[in-house]
Image 1 (cartoon, rainbow, N blue to C red):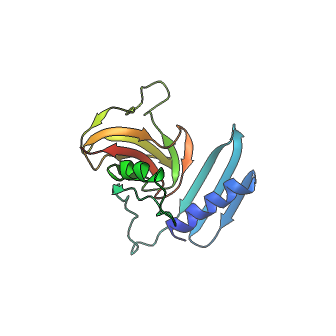
Image 2 (image 1 turned 120 degrees about the horizontal axis):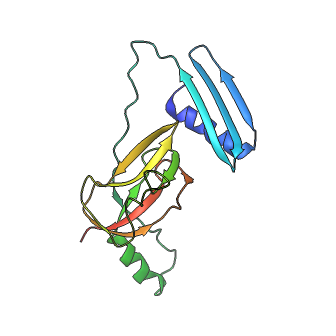
Image 3 (image 1 turned 45 degrees about the vertical axis):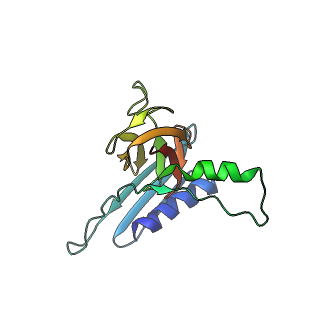
Length: 166
């Protein structure tokens, strides 16, 4: 069972409304508990990996320019908005998990709209399987928009921030 299968299983259980799911296979034992505190999900995963298998590596954030869908017929009002968003770089989630804007509840947020960020600055953390992964900026610029609310689930490749590199 690979990471993508586990992520899909977590998504399925969260949407199904089940309070607890246990899955045991020869090399994997997974327990997913949901609904314990105000819809917070708890996931415990134990996986025995053969020595010859490589350990999973976290993928770096790869910023990409956002692309607006092309309208079927030209519309004068939507063209300026599309041109405006084309100059921003979208920072997307490299993993599935829970998005947090703060390192802990009593600390200030990593970045706010209007803040300047340099390459390598931490923008947020995403909790995945009880691990908090710092998401760093791959580009220098100014935060234009935060696209996700604090403490909400995010999908792989979901846009998190818009950054103006100019």
